Amino acid sequence: MSFFHSKSATDFIPQSMLQELQWRRLESVLRHTYENVSWYRDRMKKKGISPSDIRSLQDIAKLPFIVKTDLRDTYPFGLFAVSMEKIVRLHASSGTTGKPIVVAYTQNDIDVWKEVVVRSLLCYEVHEGDILHNAYGYGLFTGGLGLHYGGEALGVTVIPMSGGNTERQVMLMRDFGVTAFSGTPSYFLHILDKAHEMGVDLRDLPIRVGILGAEPWTQALRNKIEDGAGIKALDIYGLTEIIGPGVAAECHHQGGSHVFEDHFYPEIIDPETLEPLPDGQEGELVFSTLTKVGMPLLRYRTRDITKLIPEPCACGRTIRRMQRISHRSDDMFIIRGVNVFPGQIEAALLSIEGTVPHYQIILSRQQGLDEVQVLVELTSEKFSDTIRSLENLRKTISRKIESTVGIRVSVRLVEPNSIPRSEGKVKRVQDLREI
Ligand code: ADP
Ligand code: ZN
Image (tube, rainbow, N blue to C red):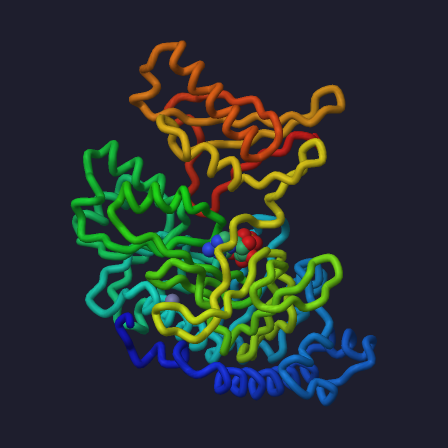
């Protein structure tokens, strides 16, 4: 049994009570949405259903889906369910995948958000007395302010770092005696390198936990981070459309992230047939917000692929977990008919000594044929090796990638620090094929 705090009580309630709560909340959010958002009303009418046709939690499957393009088509305020007087905050997605998505929060929504971030922090065993270095971007992106308000609500000392000026980040991390870090895994890696350059060993500092997410990362990268910094690296999942960070959080058992499903009801569907799949089966994650007032979303298709883990976790929480998201469906690329994810290349790379986890994937088309080039950065020690040993390394990497991914790629070794570092979400793939 892990340490218990009254603010995470809901994480431990019996499944039957949880389902009762979800059902009551669904009924009420459905009515609110139907009455106040014409988009939903029209879609439901087209399907020939009204809120009274939804008589149980399972009936949620009768409701229409909503997708990212629907949010773009109703830009900026088309899905708001209350008037602007009730809205206290607007955010927009970082736009990793195109035009931004706008979301609105009432004070109540902000309080829900705070609550789920508090519950996330308790999953990470962060509490009063901890000093949280929050490197998520402040601004329209939900990461910074989301973690910030939750941290304060729990009584944690929050440092609103945001991204950038990495040298100063390392300095303050050391001088302030930071105990917890939040940010993207790719940025943490950059901080780790910078600290090394500055002669600071994070393993000697009080920092003990990394709250990492907003982008996919592999187990291999987790190992690298945990060893390099002497911390426990835990996942945080969230998306702007649903609330921001704090939709799901991983506990110290590291067996997937607990979904705060009393607020965000998860379903897994088959992305082809759109039929719901049972727990334990992998498919596309769909969320319905059960308590959001400003801009409730019912059955939002995230395009994230995962499965729900129904087995109770060793931490005692009864809310279900979702398996780590290993890739964004937007990041997948198809090369000569083979589906490839950057994470597969990352896993292959990190299994080899002498490379650092900074890489870039460049796709091009030459005489009608797709080519993949992987730029791999060397560590400074490796960089001074003989040409022959580097050539061997290059071949090893290329063989490793070929055997993991199933396609031949050309590998180019590049100097230390030559691949641009990210301060927020990293962009690994450059697709030059359409240009
Ligand atoms: P954008 O779509 O502009 O990047 P968001 O911040 O809303 O803006 O991105 C949410 C998406 O980020 C999720 O749908 C998911 O694909 C990805 N994501 C967030 N957290 C994680 C995580 N812990 N692991 C993997 N992917 C994540
Ligand atoms: Zn757990």
